[in-house]
Image 1 (cartoon, one colour):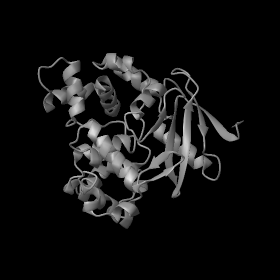
Image 2: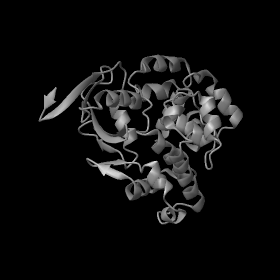
Image 3: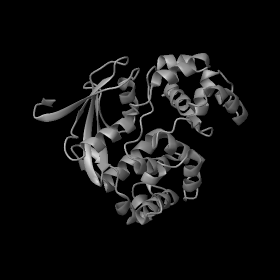
Image 4: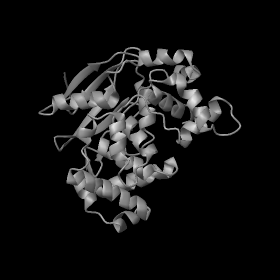
Length: 293
């Protein structure tokens, strides 16, 4: 389809899929170019080391999802389509997951946020850096610090920001990041990750082919990477469906609210609550976050 000189590709996926709730969550990050009125978002992608900006616009409904894709025509058309499907999890039948939770304590939350998918961060490498930057910070300042980092050392195309390449970050000094209000240790962690990626010791393409446990064993050895970081990376970097970060404060608060607890739940309580949510613990996590956002 051609409109106003631009090639548009139409995509239909199986419902439910609530793209408006997707946009709500994406808009929390100031780096994301979200247009609520136009029901669209621009997606920065590095395809064979080439920056490509795809625009995804919803034209359907939650029950009959349909999208127009713009900006991906050319040599990377197929690769862009594959990556967008991966990012937005278009091949995963959400109705199956929704039905799984109908007989659990999370039914009211799943009904309220019906059709909300897990949407991946636009780049796995950027996802890992963001997880490290966000550690032990309140959400507002975490996004501010990430935005400073990306705009200082990343690059822009068509009004859309790309995370700085590993080669660029590997050349930075701790002082460069301290000027942005990074702690010294966090600056060391971010630069260290970039150097691991640049040297070839850390390949995000290879990680995609490993099991959750294999990825955990590999990433946990990196300075600055703990269990919370690995779990969030597995969820939002790779889209793994069965992660439940017990140490996450947001999930603890959501459970406290849901079950009207006097204090945050203990690990034992969280294990008991979550037993029936397997094998979709990542979706339980997402919907619990949504319930307090």
